[in-house]
Length: 482
Image 1 (cartoon, rainbow, N blue to C red):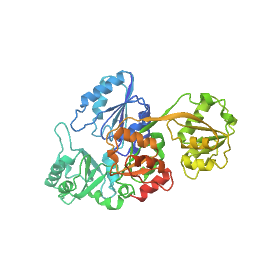
Image 2: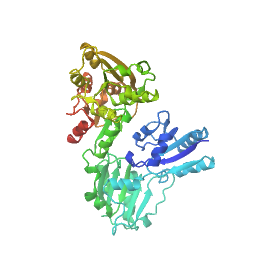
Image 3: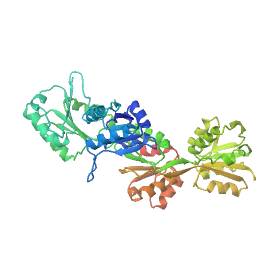
Image 4: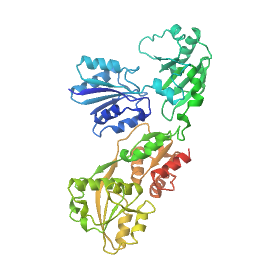
């Protein structure tokens, strides 16, 4: 028998995921997830995990609650660790209780992992405190949607002190406001409707009880949305921290492999942007690639590393083979500051060209390379041949080790973004192979350097290039141009 975890994934911002939830997602064999779960959270799953979508899609059959229950039970009984991933908190109008009861009845071991509920976080990200001393000393949370009869006693609710929060209330907003006014609530009570809370597509419509319904229609506010009623709404003008960030409102696609995307992604998130991690390539190690060179490594005069991946895989292989690193006598060069930093972690101080390209490193190394010098280049299969050919042309003896190759990732849905970032020619080629180039037309595109930009240009697409071919260079373009 396996085990089931009912996990709250939070309101949308993936960084609101709890540490416990993250640990379990990384360990899970099967993940069943809803539509409101941030798709980036699935990137934390192990590669072999089975991912099952359980949300609603227009025009398509979606899984009923009973079908979801049966799937959870099926995989648990087959011995798997099952993560049932739900938006917000599993027990706040999320039907998590029903799933837990079924697991209890089937005698299946389960745990519930609380999540940050949108009933609180949506207000926070909109500059609205749920409570405030002397103004609101209570918060009341309601669902405005139910499969059965919705039993809200508006005569009682209209007299409640504090903040009222209605989840899934957009379709019922006119009825809710009319009932509250009918039973005595001041029609001038401040209100807000929050759409897509905690992500950069968040929109907030503010009004009063008597006019909020019309304002929502005028501004074409859509779902998912939360309806808030109370004097705390008046704090929005002063406390609206989230929407004032420089990248707020921008959905930015990063096409790097997920491990390499972390640094750029975190910086974009800190500036208020929404990140879609859409790795078009996955790094696949080529096992045994170093075997034929292990006895020659001490004979090389130079070793040139072209990427962080190359450094990691090369030294991992040496460790696995119990190779004594002190046998390496070569001078070491690196393309790019990140590659140089990765070598530094291993106690190797490498030289680096002014321009972080094959052309740049060649201009640096040719000043000292002599004819018949032996050079080793551990790199990716299918990479550009400029450096190898240029070194051979000046008389060097060059060996290449293909440590890894870039393979296509699985195709994803909902890839519409405002900005697309490409960090290598392979990400360009593979992205277009997966999704076509039409999705990029008319969009803002950023390439990490001229070689990547040239690859886009071949497809008829223009890209901006940072002054420095680095992650910080990309970030400077993003913040400066938004």
